[in-house]
Amino acid sequence: MKVIDTGLPGVLLLEPKVFGDARGFFMETWQAARYAEAGMPERFVQDNHSRSRRGVLRGLHYQLTQPQGKLVWVTRGAVFDVAVDVRRGSPHFGRWYGCQLDDVDHRQLYIPPGFAHGFCVVSEEADFFYKCTDYYHPQSECGIAWNDPAIGIDWPPLPEVALSGKDQQNRPLALQAPDDLPVYEG
Image (cartoon, helix red, strand yellow):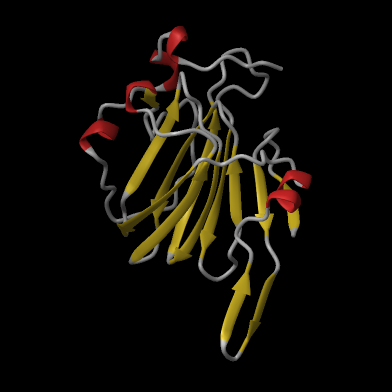
């Protein structure tokens, strides 16, 4: 497995070994010892799967009192995936990293706790999988506006963006109450 530096400490882009031939391919999507060597926690407690159509944008989400680290990848289609450092006091506060994840390269992205996460679907449809280091806790879920000009995420062009009602209510990072942001622990 190849680990690629993203410029944001703790955010890891991973290229697992994929073994393919005329029959198809095989790859490990998770192996505790190997991924721990890469800098990820050994403990994941929840797996999630979403399917979305072109133009769906989910995010930018984070959990305040039960922060989740996420290992994410796409098994069908393609998404543009983004991590944003929203940890109050972080030297990288407000910086983002984005990359395409798809069913061709099979890359994975690890987003540590304290980062907001989101993605938009750039193929006709996409199946998106993620492993989480803590359980989903709706009472502690927070969101940042996907199009916050101060963050300046360079989303790929889409004919339309489809957001959930909840994500339409997300506010820019600068308008978040300090107590609604995770704290950088250095």
